[in-house]
Length: 310
Image (cartoon, one colour):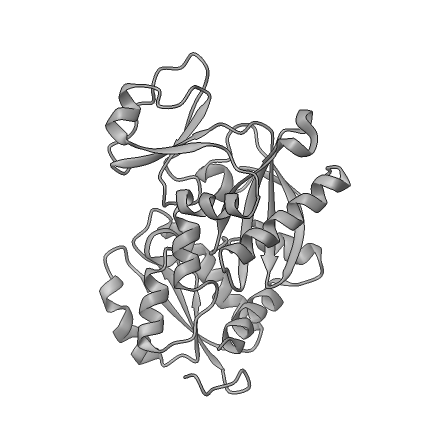
């Protein structure tokens, strides 16, 4: 595999589905990317994994014999370093970030440690047992409770002033992240290699949860965000610095909250996604289109970027 160039890479295996809470989103991302890659001229093999079919992946890849694997898996297995390690062990080139950067970005606590060391602004947080969070306020309200290693706003609870401790679902992990609530506007920036593309503001009637992200009409995306130039510049800078600090490759997306009443001091980095959604309502394809890159061109770039790495 290592000796092949992009000139001979005609077959792309698109991985989708998998065991995470974002299974359906991954299927949507993968099918959209597979269609775009066909438009871009590749031969495409779709590998849709059921929730309990991860063990079949090596055999299915051996049958497909791809030149590169397009990773459209989300959440556990897909963006936590596990499938990346498997693909490296099997000898396949693959898209997006590698083992370490994927694992770092997926672990919100460790990613925050990296951000702090780079001087990037984050809010305070702790890891606490689920049962303790149910019983008492482990941080002063308002705060947010969420899994430390899931994405797409899966399992997010917001606790306001005057609320009782949250009645966390039994589906939540035994240890959860409790994070000081960051008020303000929801902003996000996609990074494509060494280029921060644009700032999008996400406008919703309430919390930007799973439904708002993936349901038609669940949110409105304003690109470019109508914010001061200094905040735009700071978002672009912080997203690129986060991408580099975590060692990301290919495409990533970093999310922010901005409290405009506090000016530049109100900008807070929330997290970096190493496997940004690629569904019809997703943010990264919109930002690419804003700077003149079509969806097939974006998918082609992601594949070629993977093939050009050592």
